[in-house]
Amino acid sequence: MVNLQLWETFKESITAYTGLSPTTFFTVLALAIAFYYVVSGLFESPPPPRPRSFEPEMEPLPPPVQLGEVTEEELKVYDGSDTKKPLLMAIKGQIYDVTQSRMFYGPGGPYALFAGKDASRALAKMSFEEKDLTGDISGLGPFELDALQDWEYKFMSKYVKVGSVKKSVPVTDAPIPGDSSEASGTDAAKPLEDGPLESAPVESEENKPKEVVASTVNADVKEE
Image 1 (tube, rainbow, N blue to C red):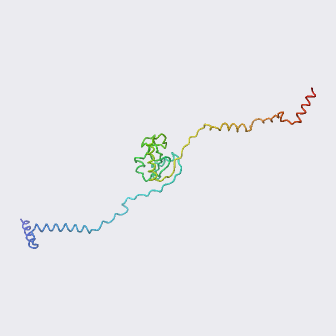
Image 2 (image 1 turned 90 degrees about the vertical axis):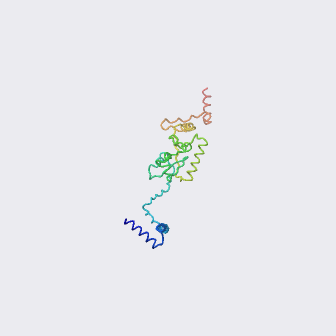
Image 3 (image 1 turned 135 degrees about the vertical axis):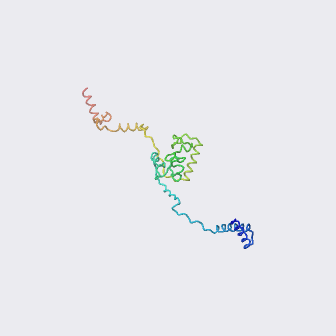
């Protein structure tokens, strides 16, 4: 009852002081408050920037290191398992630094099995089989060779070449043609070091001095 009397008194005061009905008064009051918040938001200063310590900092990639010519075994240590070493991959015997694409060629990436190898055959065939992880591209078809060429162009334009894969040449014991005759001729002309001395060549009758031949003929005549 008391509250109702206070409300009636308040409405009469609004009408008496503003000349507006209570409904109109509260509507104008709500619009004024909304307008105030809109205008104050336009002139509000931006929030202060966050300290730099909270921002993630990306470590700069080290410059590519030129390796020169390395073997396939030496190339395997650059497969990304050691984060302190560059991530390398070879195509057609040429080694490229793919460290900047670690998300693709590093451990856990979709092409991680190609890292640290010459995967020319696997790239040409788009194969993920272990037997194709080799640089041997013999027997590939024209479409596969074109696909490999596209990969090579991509690597040449995007990554830095840092070396090449040393070709392994199989060593055989088979004699080289032509060496046997030369060796035998050399051995034949070579004097024996431990054997007996060669006898002096016997002079033929034609090579004897004429005086010796004549004396021999005279001796034969006298005996007759």
